[in-house]
Length: 169
Image: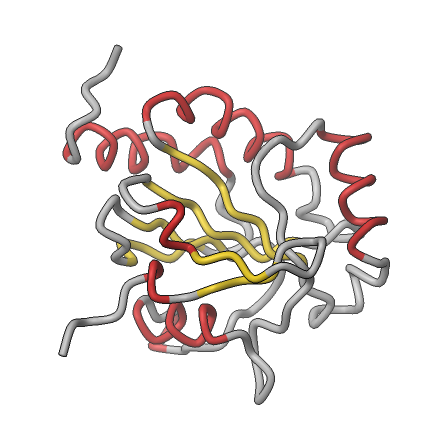
């Protein structure tokens, strides 16, 4: 039996189509649960900058809007996409809204939280903009708290890009 990786999962696109994360095989990923009405929402700017700066070398951000924390993502997926485009010019993939905790947590998030536990060994996502860094083989490398800025992840991302064969250009 092979070990699961993030590539073992499918997620729903904003148009309702199931998309296999196998499409991202070979890329370094930053998977983030997002919200449009959160104190951390300005992190979209840093996420977009990271994406733009490193996508040509095999990095992408995958955003999963979630309304489980303070009801800070109340809108429809169309409203979420419009917000991201209008305010932050987001070009990385934003998927359909999901639950990241509880009985209806998406299987991808069940896997992520088991693979990289939070503070004091907790599996639960504490808030919006929790981030998971994934290597090119689909393995979860590290979990970051909501307050960790995208900019501060640059060296960890660079390490994975270089370690996995995409030398700095």
